[in-house]
Image (cartoon, rainbow, N blue to C red; front, side, top):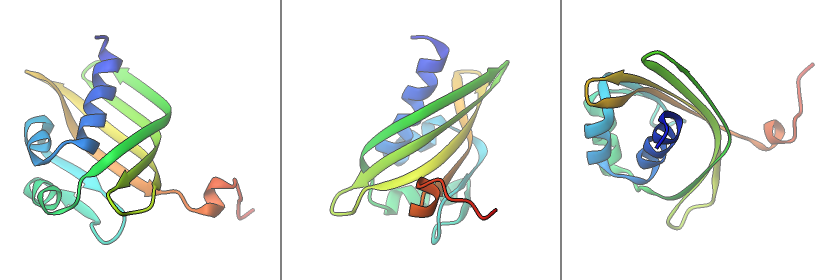
Length: 125
């Protein structure tokens, strides 16, 4: 599998996997930014939060963009994800990976909800 394909596979595993995926594939000191109420999480707060939250049952990553420079990779995309008994959620996401011994590790991840005005392309100016 090529490097970019490996990164996208890893990214999907964070959506669909459990706390063990996070423990085995996150860099030390990783930071994640989620919509309210989760907010900004780092280290054990990430795995604790994942362990207590319902997992996603599906994710579709559209408009994929990747940039790999040496030992750093950034993925950006639009996610459509759903959990059991919850409506589909749409988010703009960005993840940064660093290559360490043993492979790629997630260093940061951010999810920004897509609202109707954003999806329709409206602007304030």
